[in-house]
Length: 439
Image (cartoon, rainbow, N blue to C red):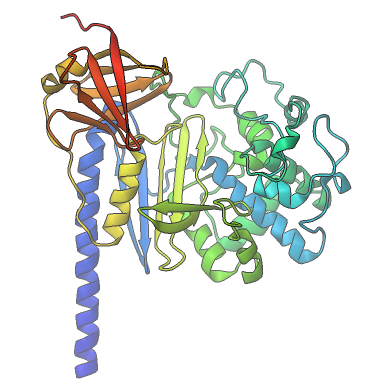
């Protein structure tokens, strides 16, 4: 009887804890949803602790099958395929890429596979610096060959130093195809998707995918679904950022990678997570939230952002996506999600009327740096904008506005009504209003 009673007590406590976390997740939804709703952002969140999942959606129906582009999180998949080749004996991390690929302009054949994996090649970026984006492709002639023809000269001073470059993983995809005489996309399906039982994961984004969340551009907040061209993801982003998936599939994938050894051996996982006193391993990053270490690899692409955090000590997971290139309020969001997993309450933003900060609104320039930015009001929210970066400002205390993504805090100068004080990383800068607000 004592054993039965103890089991019932544990089940009750587990249910109680799960209910508390669900309530906290609902508080988080209420905290962020008004800000994301004002800028047409759709977000999906999935938390995993022990065998429990907690999920919520901001600004759209709670459909767990919603698919999105995982962006550069694709690099983890590519690194796994490379490590599988190492385990098969078909390549070594020390092998030069010239052993597998024909000469490519501005790409040294002496670079090693491991240098590609660690972004230590000094190669120039070829994806992400073009003058057009995924939804404004000038022609339909995008081919992978075109991508590699546009690589700028290598910076040899950067060899051996971490400089993140998509070009590295595009080349790794090419190597995988050369070794296997098979497409990278078929390798993904046969050696990762199927063994992990991924049901809503696709090698690249296309309009044919059911339940694909519509990408939205940064500046105008407009739906870009009709502009999707699969060639951008398949031929351009390729092994650096092509994959589409949903949160549950991604959680299952990480479970197989980190805990079940379905894909690679424990030895290979240790290689992936050897960050060499830095923050980048082999297709994985060392991430931190409030000094707690996580493993993962974020992804940003035109109209999509994805974040994933795996705690190697506890097995806890934090995963979320939005239909935008950047994640507004991400630092605050990350801390709050971690707090929910730790059964801690999350702080609320102050409720304020925009007239409280009427004198903050205007165009500014930072003294001594000539950096221009603006603070403006839209639909009863106040925003900070610098070039294409636009984020909502919140308040935790009277007469103070905060960008919880970057940590910038704005206060009114007591000495000059046309100046703002910009606080960031313990530094204090003055911003002078250049265009006065006129009623």
